[in-house]
Image 1 (cartoon, rainbow, N blue to C red):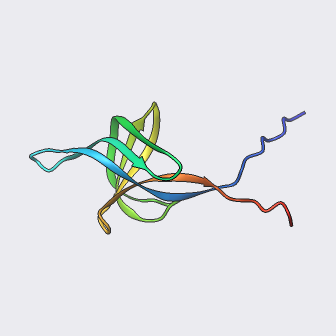
Image 2 (cartoon, helix red, strand yellow):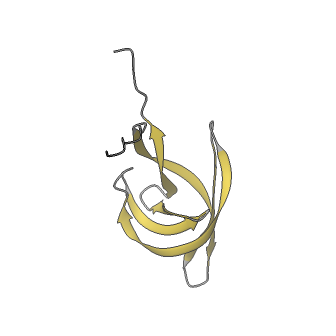
Image 3 (spheres, one colour):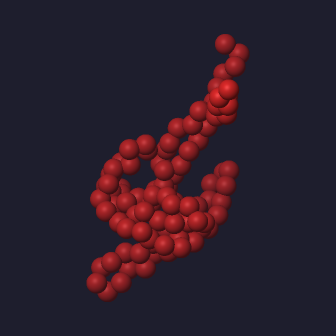
Length: 103
């Protein structure tokens, strides 16, 4: 007998704008060092332990285009984007979709 799939709350991906502490060297290279944010539900500072690579890329889930940094934070690989369009840093964050069970 196959196991039943676990119930998952539906989620959607959105742009979560973040503050980034970075190093900008004399040759123009940008290296993100940490991600910081504060809003109504959470706040925190997360050290970037490694930048795996950087390249121009679209954020398929959240929308937008810019320089994408593939980074490691707390042992997990994630993407950090810098948008040249509005000069902001963002990550692809997940938010649960509210379900109306009264229907």
